[in-house]
Amino acid sequence: MSRNLTQQPAPATRLKRLFSNQRTVALLALVFLFVFFCLAGNNFATYTTFVSILDSSYYIGFLAIGTTFIIITGGIDLSSGTVMVCCALISGTLIKMGYPVWPSLALCIVLGGVFGSLNGFMVAVMGLPAFIATLGTMMISRGLGSIITATASVTFPQRRTPEGAFRNIFKILSADTPTGGYPTGFILFIILAIIFGIILGKTRPGRYIMSLGSNKEATRLSGIDTVRWEMLAYIIGGLFAGLAGLSYAATYSTVLPGTGNGFELDAIAGTVIGGTSLSGGLGSISGTIIGVFIMSVLKTGLPFVGLQPHYQLLFTGIVLVIAVFVDVLNRRRQRT
Image (cartoon, rainbow, N blue to C red):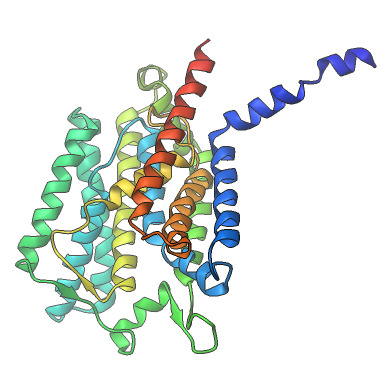
């Protein structure tokens, strides 16, 4: 009996293991923030606020899912925000010119895949550093959106028109609910997160993509086509950027050219806060969801305690530094 007791880890050891898991720390932080705003905020704990948190999460969430695949390979994508807006601008311009609505909207996702393929080609085939390659794509997509629209804003069909029915994919309005609608975009976000979480964690392509970040050279020497799987990661990132552009267009009436900078940083922050290592080889879609909701709760909750939403940048930066520091400590511990 005494031997069994000595074999059990001490409570301090179990607690240390618990807090060494960055995803667990992020989940505890999310719960803490939600409880804090419920207690300190005036009328925060309402159905309306809860739906606002969901509404403000999904288009950044789409970007973050794609970003997770890229960062796990050890890469980075600085172009996803401007690609998102560029795809939306091109689709909106086609609709304005009289092209059918649904094919034009589908093109938004296809264009995202094209930009993702461009990033993947430059990184995996040409061997360019991901930072430089995606920085170039960021400039290209931002400039292309402005050129195609002649720097004019693009307005998408309104919800009350037959052409505006695509907005119902992301939110169904109803006078029977306290907020006037159902956040269907959040449902789509969760469904895709589950699907791609399974792909990343349970399938061969996901394991290959994960192994790229762990040790790319060892993965190549084991006979795996690293170029193919690294390109796939960037293509997935591009497709989700296109989907984010579609959801962004459905959320807002007007899309402005020359915008999009900053959204990619939100996606990267949500991904890293959720436990994906910037060094690659470690991460999960479930952790990314937690990271995205931490940012959404901060953005929604701060006004309830008397702070403006731009304070989100300050607190998100603090949380991001802590998350990266935890990752660095974990990797040092693994090497010793």
